[in-house]
Image 1 (cartoon, rainbow over the protein chains, first blue to last red):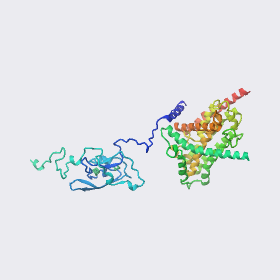
Image 2 (image 1 turned 30 degrees about the horizontal axis):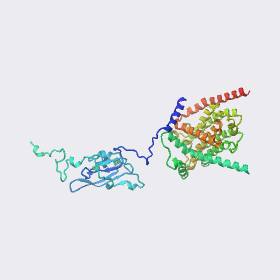
Image 3 (image 1 turned 135 degrees about the vertical axis):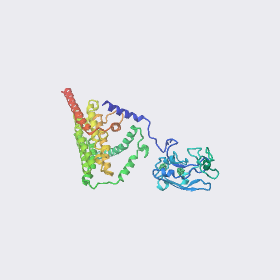
Image 4 (image 1 turned 135 degrees about the horizontal axis):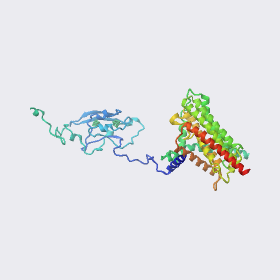
Length: 171
Length: 318
Ligand code: SF4
Ligand code: SF4
């Protein structure tokens, strides 16, 4: 009996407690930088596209909302000819970001991407590609990988030893 | 002629007042509940969200009014209107201020009890006509609960009637000029308050609806305007019970400085606020607990209260 009255009194006191609700459009919440929102394709510090069109993100995506087509440019670098994310299906799980070997695809704390028309939720490469490095400032895939491109042969990457002449190892 | 005009004006005034207060209560309750749960509540439509009600109205009026093919059609349609009619007509006997009453019957209290008993039909028929097991379970519970609590409700009021010596609301309020009946009749007030909660099927005693067990209880199959009638009926019921509590226990229109009607309104709003507060704080009991509490605690309390009141009146008056 007493506990019931005490409960009622305590609930009444909540009248003067601060509200938990954030009145959204007027007041924005500060989202942490690793929040999983709108997806972007980033560039490496030299300004070239990071994505090497390896399809790993498309394979990792649980709802299959990434579509892309690989191509190769004159330098021998791979890039996506088109890169399409259907945001009406994306569940913002972040698996694509985890799968990506080049830190190209990244999720950002921007969540305001509502549309009245579903068509507008299909983002093409122009919409996804940004002019920055995103969360990883210094990473440049071609500079650290053993892949040969025009101005960099095998064995010239950072921390890479020259390729071993296999035949010279023969006894 | 003048007399007729006055009566007509009162009728229209009371109807308008109740019909704005009861739906306004829906917004008020949502707002208050939100405040007590550290939320904001509906605050977008109109100033402080007060036009939320209009938005809700438009929504519910444009909804499909669906009658399930397996339902008993005439009964299904009549059921929701009974509750609104019954609760609304109870307002006829309440005296809001000296001279402001549709009909100050000399059996006002009895009329109110009879009308609140009528509301049981609405719930019972609604659940039965829906031909749905959840609806039926809900209405069985509702009938059991409302009929039981009806008993204590009536008994708890008899102390007030004995003290004032009249069944008429006007006389009862007049008898509280010096001392509000909430003091000598505090037991009766407590019993009546709990019974009123059960009569209006409010949380925590909302077992007939009990979303977590019965979908929506007796109005599971209702939609659109018919559902709105049940909903409105509940809120008119809350208003009615608040009005009755004010008139019988809190001195009706008596109060300093302000005009009588304003006092009555203020007190009513305060009691409604208490109803909402209780909804915000207490969980729902089990059905057998509800019944046990009613018959084993409230009934003896009400009887004891009545006995003691009678004895004291006898000892005093001889
Ligand atoms: S966040 Fe998840 S669902 Fe969205 S594109 Fe990446 S992997 Fe697919
Ligand atoms: S975004 Fe990353 S994972 Fe996806 S194709 Fe490009 S490089 Fe591969």
